[in-house]
Amino acid sequence: MRLAELQRAFQRNVLDGSREIESIVAGTERFPTAERLGVYSGGYAERLAEALAQTYPAVRAAIGERRFDSLIGRLAHSRPSRHFSVRRYGGELDGLLAENFAAPRGRVLAELARWEWLLAEVFDAADRRALTQADLAHLDPASWPQLHFELTPTLRRIELASNAVGWWKWACADAPRPRRWRLQRATEWALWRQELAIYFRPLSLVERSALEAVVAGGTFGELCATLAEHVEPEDAPVRAATLLHTWLKEGWIVGVRS
Image (cartoon, rainbow, N blue to C red; front, side):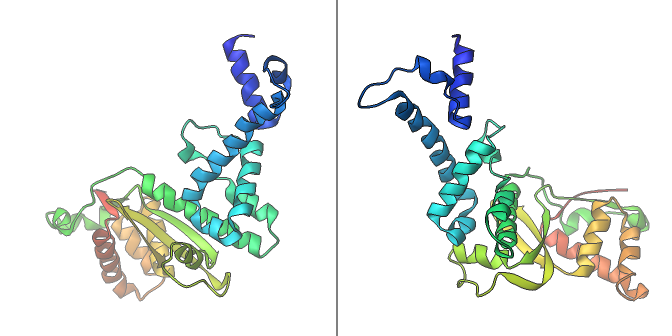
């Protein structure tokens, strides 16, 4: 058997439990072949559980260490990694949680997993220099209605119908254990990074609509038109300027063009 064939057979044993490689792996009475190979199969799942415990600390705390390790073991063998980096592995955990826990807890745990995965995405996202008020001060006032704004690559949004943020804070020892899983109404959150710090906050319906207009490539004039659907039309430009000031302060704006 060639090296490449041997490697593939070994991988199938670790991931799928295939026994074809057992014929060429020597065993002893004390340490049979299957047991020797099992060291690698079990170790593979254990290492992934250790890695994903860093990505999903709140999920692990919410369901318990043993249950978490068991689920990761099932994930490792049913949905093997397709990436060279372990950082890109584990994004499917939310689906596995929804399948293995009865509703409504399963849905809440799935949301908690999506929240923690998004935090990791925000931390890994590309860096871009944020613009400041001074960067916009030189712009011709007549050009503002045609301006497009580019948002930081670290910005993410997620709608949560559960108290996933409260559970995450509890797991990080930043808050008491939540008393409930679900919220009375769904809330959209924004997450972003400034240097090495991750920030997040809930979005109002007005700001959510404004962000969607910017993400869709709308101009400042179109942003004002969108806000005019939620506030008095004459107040829309002031509200747009206020939001833009907030986004600049939080480092969300990284580019502007006409």
